[in-house]
Amino acid sequence: MPVGARTNLEQGLIRAWARRGPQAFALWPLSLLYGALTGLQRTLYRLGWLKGQHLPVPVVVVGNVVAGGAGKTPTTLAVVAHLAARGWRPGIVSRGHGRATTDVRAVQADADPRAVGDEPLLLRRRTGVPVFVGRQRADAGRALLAAHPEVDVLVCDDGLQHRALARDVETVVFDARGIGNGWLLPAGPLREPWPRPVDLVLRTEPGAELALPPGAQAFAAQRTLAAQAVRADGSTVPLAALAGSAPLVALAGIARPEAFFAMLRAAGLTLHETLALPDHHDFNSWSRPIDERETLICTEKDAVKLWPRRPDALAVPLRLDVPVAFFDALDRRLAARGYHPQTHAAP
Image 1 (cartoon, rainbow, N blue to C red):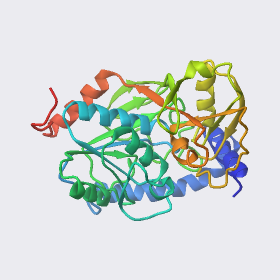
Image 2 (cartoon, one colour):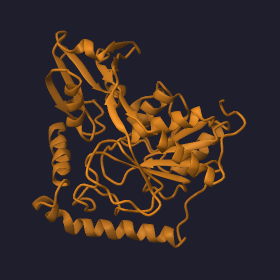
Image 3 (cartoon, helix red, strand yellow):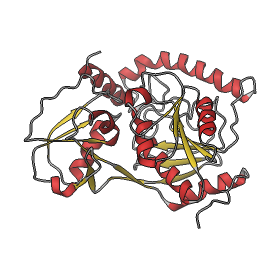
Image 4 (cartoon, one colour):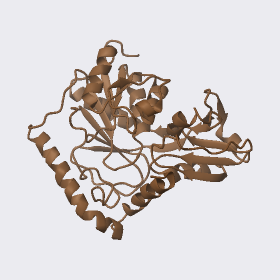
């Protein structure tokens, strides 16, 4: 499918999922089939006919119940940083959405994003902790622990619906969309009905009120852009220095490109052009002629794939200011299950 057509399809679905309009109603019968299939799977796990695989270390899942990005990767970065500061030695497992491979493999800092996925590569570069990808997250976790026996807690990036991996703490992330029109895919954005049992809920953007399941704790984070843009060589340039400079061309291959563009504008940047690309776009077919008069600016997730082709592009990291109370609640949940940082804990 041509890039433009795929982008239009994705953005059209996101708009349709915001309300119960004609498009959503047309897809509603399919959502009943989807709901029946996913409901059967949940029932089989609840009855114990299917069992999640337990790993020898605690597992924290960060995911969402809506299709598309809601802030999972920044939340995973924040959770890993907190656990490391508390004295844990974390590792990360992920499916590696969009990768061309199907095996279980380690993610190296110089890996090809097509082989490991853009988000796992970003997580590896930003955290420095071991990251493994695999369709079966339990297999990825076992491989990670075999290669890195010092790891004593695993954070699963996405995988909320991947019940084959048993987990100790579940965090669900929502952005401004909330649950949209409240219908299941493809009539709405929900991967499963909400509310559902969960430990922690994190809102990365203000939005409509959410119904919470019993026992869940909800917290609000603030998502902002970093003050510095990053070059391919790791050097930085103040974001403020880009205001009024060369024409800025912003691009984003994420679920909600306009949200990134709006944040750039809110930071005082004037965008000469914006290019909305499909989520997880691989840039293999992207061939914008080099114009030395313009400056390309993109997300970090896009940069790991764009820099081999356009090392002149600038990436703007996304920062998530997570309240301390969220991390306190995470620590309490782990402690309630008998897990504590080991003797290597930082003071």
